[in-house]
Structure formats: structure tokens, C-alpha cells
Length: 384
Image 1: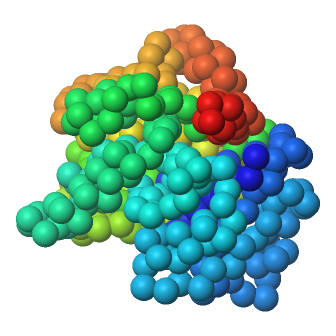
Image 2: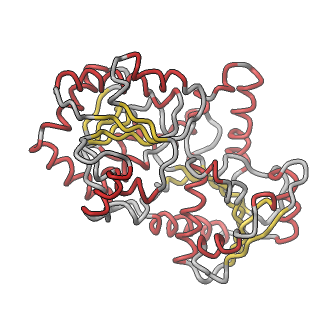
């Protein structure tokens, strides 16, 4: 097979923390490790590239000679003009994208496979007016209609798409994301070194990891933490919020002062994966009471690191961590507070949850994601 992959967002530093970037990067890396038979052309806008890009690409693809960087000049629209021109030139069997947009024009024998991460667009700042709603919905609608196969990370996202009647279930495949190998492997000395770097030595802390935006429900999380902090009486206890600023983040940043715990809440907007891999197991508990998600990769990473998890009871989180975490409704301040206290003090229950969570996490690897995705590609080509 000849497989083309949309690398439109690769090598853009400010997009690295986003789901589509991480997904595309990790899938390519995993595919290059397991597949030495098929040909892969990675379409990347030339504006994304610099003198170091060839080295970065070789690292990304494990120097697999079957993976080719195809530099494309962006003309008008990368997706709807530049990519189709390249597709007609290369005529691949598969074009895969994880960016919720597909070319409208393509060679007849090229199958479109898309990854839809979730349907959180209603929380976008553009969703406040008619034009904004159209801009959010139309690309996802066209992606659903034009793709031959839609890959989703959870049954929840699959059900949501089916409810909208944009796509029938026969066109859908649920393939969860994987956990990077670096999680769950930090030594005690590595953990202490990173804690020292962030001034967290001998300071117990809860950790939240995600982009700072309204649907992450950070103000309510801070409010619940403030109540737990006062009830526990642990003066050194902190809440570490790791994530870049998204949109409408002002309320989240002002929440600690609003609830009188500005000295207990630490915001870090730029933390590397390697540091996170030590900050997470060094934490007292992981917390995420988000309003809406399509999956929960950081939840899995916390389970792999054997960290107690306090989660909102939204379907994707329950799908991943049922019986292995503390759950409460996203707007339940009292329930969140009580779960924080339990996660810190209930050693016996924590041990049961942690052991179950670790076993769950072992199923989620990028190698499994890549193998299952490759089988989807093969199933389409075999049916020609």
C-alpha cells in the first residue's frame, strides 16, 4: 500500500500540546516502528520546515526508509487545493488525516480515513454566533460525510456522531489512543530532580494537565480544592495546573485569588513531556473534572503512573477508568472536595484503585493503536 498522511500541523511548536498534534506524531512514530512493508508519504507544508526538520523527521520515523517527507507549497488552502494536487500526483491507496478536515476532491481510488477526536466544538469561542457555528460544524460534517472510514478514540464519540446522523456506524472504528513509553518509568531520583526543578520538594500537590479553557471547568476545580485544603489543614498542599492558555482563560487564572488560595495554586504553561513523566508520579493525586472530552489520555497516563485520580463522571472518563478512580459530577463541588480528601487520606481504597488502574493502562499502547489503524487501512484496500 501507499499511504499518505496529513502532516499539516507537524513541526509547529505552539501546536505540540494539542491533541491532533500529539496523535499524529505518536501514530507516525508507532507505524514507522511496526511497518516496514508499506510506503508512507507525510504531507507537510514547506512553511513548517527549517534546517533541522530532516533530522526531526528521521527521529519521528525511526529512520524507516519507507517514510518520506513530502514538502508541499501551500496555495490558497492546504487541505482543499495543495493536498488534492499532491494526491493526484502520488495516487496513494489511503489518505489519513487527524485534523477534522478532508479534501473535497481526490483521486477516485484513494480512500479517505479520518480521526475525529471529539465533538467539543460547542465550547469553542467561535460557537457564539451563526458564522462561528458554521465554521466549527461544517468541516467536521464534511469530514464525516466524505470519509470512507471514521476512526474515533471512544465509544462515547462514536455514539455522539451517530446521534447527529452524520455517519452510519458501519463507517466507524473505535481505536483508543496510546500512552507514551516514558510514563510509569521515572525513578525516585528522577522524580525528586524534577520536583526540585519546579520547587515542589516536600510539597504534596494535586496535578491537572490540559489546555486552560472553559470546558476544563478549572474554576470549580479550584473552588473544590480550596475547601479540601482548609478541611485537611495541610499547609504545604498545592494544586499544580499544567497547560498552555487556550481561550477565555481569564476566569481560570483569577480563580485562586477569588477563593483565597492564590499561594497554593501554581500555573505552569510550558512543561516538557519528560518533565511531566516525573511530575505525574510525584503528585499526590491527579484531578480533571472537565465538562466534555472525546477521550482522556492524561487519565491513562495517571493510571500508568499509579496516581489516584479524581475525575468528572463524563462518559469518556468512565469508559477508561471505571472502578479505578474517584468520580463526581463536574458541577458537584462538595463531591469533588470529598474525593480530593479521600484520594489524599484513604490509603487502603487508593491501593485497590491504583492496582486496577495500572492493569487497565497496560492495554493502551501506541503500538496497539498503530496495528489496529493499519488493519483499517488494509481492510479498505482489500475490498477494491
